[in-house]
Image (cartoon, rainbow, N blue to C red):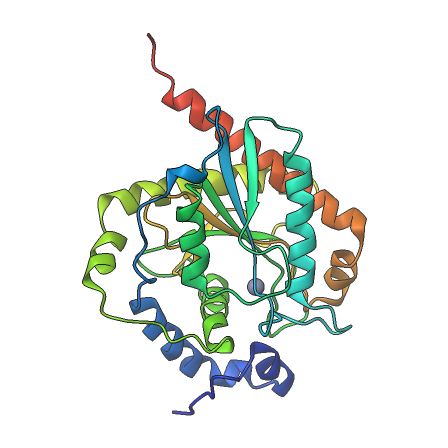
Length: 286
Ligand SMILES: [Zn+2]
């Protein structure tokens, strides 16, 4: 089986046109990563929580630094576009005083996947959302999708493909993932995680409902796959693929402020309505 050097980027794969042929080895690579849990997370440090019972939203612009993410035909880099969209979401949510937004990265630098989860825990986040605009081998792939974690396997071939690519981000950044951490192995499969995944799927449906009127959906339902960045045992987490940067029409759209704001508004509205449902469900008489 062909081996990848750590510096092999998905862009190089796509450019070589060999991505499809190499998929089995990419899969094997990602599989070994999936088995590797994130670095041990410390208990949430509540000290950084704001007063007044505000909800903390941790937005995670994908990629950054040495990892540019997917690159469109016109040369647009995913890492820049998703940071812009995250800024737009933060701006939209600033109108809601019961919500406070924090970002895993606010500039162009690389963060390992497990550290993104760790940052969310350190801030005591109530919700985690990774924002992307990925690529596919076919330039015709288009539309937005939302993903939640799966412990059992990917819900579709696209879900598997994208999770493998996202999980390979750490390879680009040269991160060595530790494996065989029994504590997290156990945590990943415990009931808390199952409940968190249920909440993540609810969050996903709120986001999809808001995106549906403004942009084509690649998949009508929240898909599931083993995304390393979604492996928080306790924080509802989703990954939003806003569009395919490898689709020339969508690359053009992603390059416009109007489209980025439209998607950001939909994401922000989805977050607000998720919290509203969550609060309604948790309200108890007396
Ligand atoms: Zn991405």
